Image (cartoon, rainbow, N blue to C red; front, side):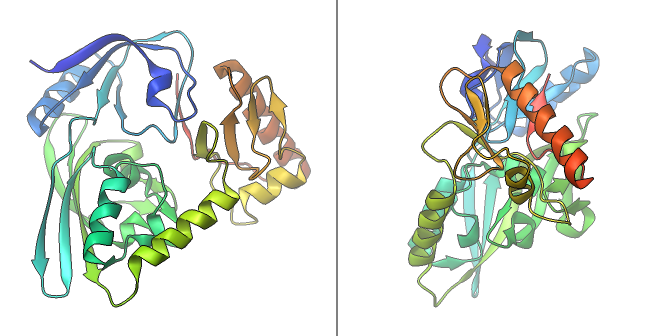
Length: 288
């Protein structure tokens, strides 16, 4: 039987700590259990919602009756050495922190720019997470995933539709595992990671519950710049606001609510469109 919990506080599954309750959250332990849950969502005509670290997920208030699939128990991690390269085979629930510890231990190059992103492998692949000029697709080789009919598939990176902060998995498919390739390095990888973490801490509000980058950067200008010029840096609605450190980061100052968050987002989007003629595209995913 697949492990599950009922009437779960969804704010625990979102790094900004906002959200209602899930009627049920499932905690599969293997690919067959995930496959079963996706087929169940099809049979019951319910949307399935993968949940990882929850750094870009925000849930509305009330009770949500979807097939919530947590990757908490999908922590398979193995590797193989091939000359100067090491392949990592990672299930969806493996955290970036776990990968970073491995990277530092063996001084591997390729993952260091992704340090500090609060993500697990499944969510990071689905959104093509990135930082400091690197995206996870830069080091990705292959993804094992389950489509909306419950079929298990393997796709090479080249076969997956992906771009800046986007992959086709956002529309269809549950990312079950990924293979990434890293290289043995002559650089001091631990030092580079430490520098990135210091830089991230300076620029981002890591001392408060946050959903990370709120909007994708338009081609015209960074979203943070546009929001700051529009007067939204530090602007609050109730206990939800855009950070005073970085205008593109939503933060919860205490008891923020979903309605406050939506109010602030709509205000920001309308203002930026009016002032600059630019439609901000959300990087965060809202489940409602």
